[in-house]
Length: 266
Ligand code: KIV
Image 1: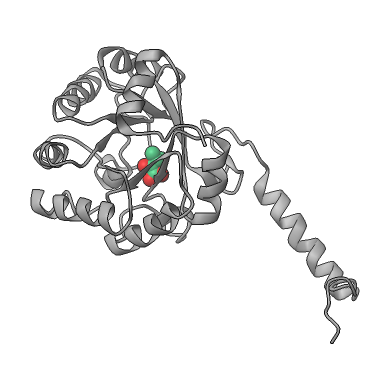
Image 2: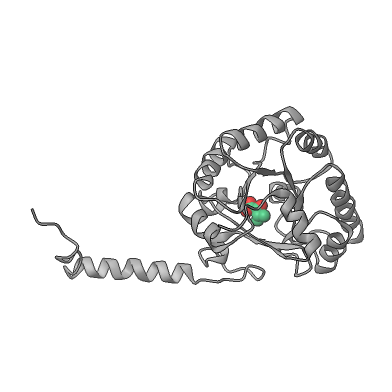
């Protein structure tokens, strides 16, 4: 195994000009495959609420559900940095709730860092966490937990006022001690400017090529979800799995599965 990836290593990678490769995972089997392939960071995203649970957004997934998934993923990860995603309703409650949830992510879920959406009032909690031994990854731009405030999934930071707010928040997150931050669905130029202004790496999704790394929801990258412009498909998963299931049904109907080789005799 190559050297274990840590939060400080990701900052070094930015300095060395090595792009960070990240994906989400939700179970031990996929996590082990992703880890062995050489990813730097594996995020147990609250996107699980959508891709695993079939919910319409990420709002209703609970902390207990996120801890359960993180624990499972941790059993498959050896090398990559494992990041748990703080679900909606924790940072909104209080700094204490956020610190307590982070402790659960690390103690029970075996996460090595926690991702928190937003800035503003959340900065106090982030500062507490980073000064108490809990590495934090920020998340700005189209933060999905704010989808009802935004009124949809559109590009963020497209006007000057919002772009300035995101730039300011990025610097505040860095000051609060985050080791990295996700930039989601912001204009290419804005992502470039923010990435160049920071010492910590940005990890982009739908934010163009100038971030210090890239992340995708693994189910999108495997071609299991709906087609989206920014999410390149590296596998036609839906088609391949569908074909396999159709073949399986066919084999059963024709009495071709199981064969004698696949059966046991006393
Ligand atoms: O929940 C998630 O999967 C995420 C990534 C898209 C960054 O936050």
